[in-house]
Image (cartoon, rainbow, N blue to C red; front, side, top):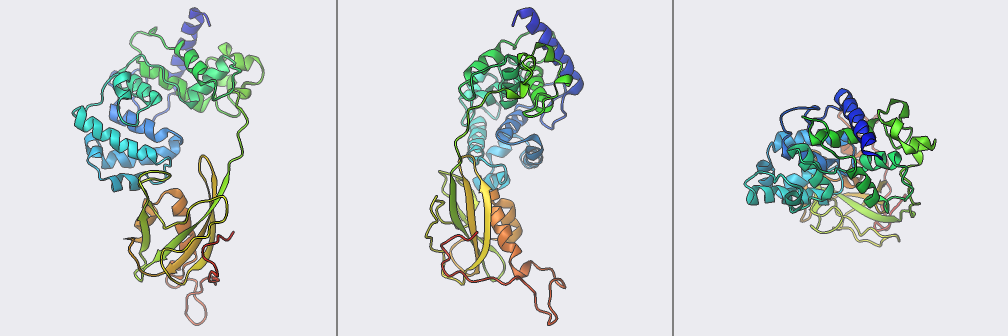
Length: 379
């Protein structure tokens, strides 16, 4: 694309952004003189990896209310941070978040470094996050390329190479659009303008080309099939695994939780006692001897596999992290929260006083069939 066209394209997109920028808790408005707090930019970018703005926004509000500075976050106990992260997924990010906060607090005096190179040296900070923080928080001329920007660039240049192989090419093309041609404009405005365009107009499906300020430059639209871009290779079928989750309650109604190993899936998170998750039905022994009852199963999808998790419930004792029901529901990652909710729905104690009672005044709970083999999932 000739430099003159790039300058015209940039001016059109920045004008559109001035008028249509999303209002987000972690963002300064277009053209704002004040810099956005790098802590808030970094925190939001980590949260937004692999999730959406509506899902991440309440977490961001709770985090910044509880830990308003990077120093506050650095001082948080690991268990508190992991519990607060529950439900955001990709839990390695939570461990990296804490490691990065502690590095900033301990090695940089609580102040984020202001260059891409220095930001990249922080634990858990990759190329995209370093570029985003450098551009948005420190007004650096950085090439910020997330999934939305990849889609815009793939359509703008009608890139035929399939993703993910196309990513180096998409990043190179995005870099040709980064420039210093609007006096007073912040580099973060350009990065966020591309992100907003991808999120609200150049959508994955049904792009709103008639509303796009740069549609006249778009080679993808000129083909008549803008939705075809970015071109994707056919995904392999996601494998399916099976497992068992054991919901054990004590006489006071507390839930038996365990702390998962730091390494691996859901590392460091609180969880229910569970079997291994295997493609074949596992033969699993329950964590303690008890009168285990089948409560059905829940389904969950991870990035690399789907899971059917049979749920077994019992009352008993043992060496666990005994946690009140409400706290357990708040602290557990989504897959275990689903299992616990399934178990609680089958418990007589979940019926409110005066509700669900038979003529004799007893709680009218669903009848359960005791498990003959509690190690085998039931669908």
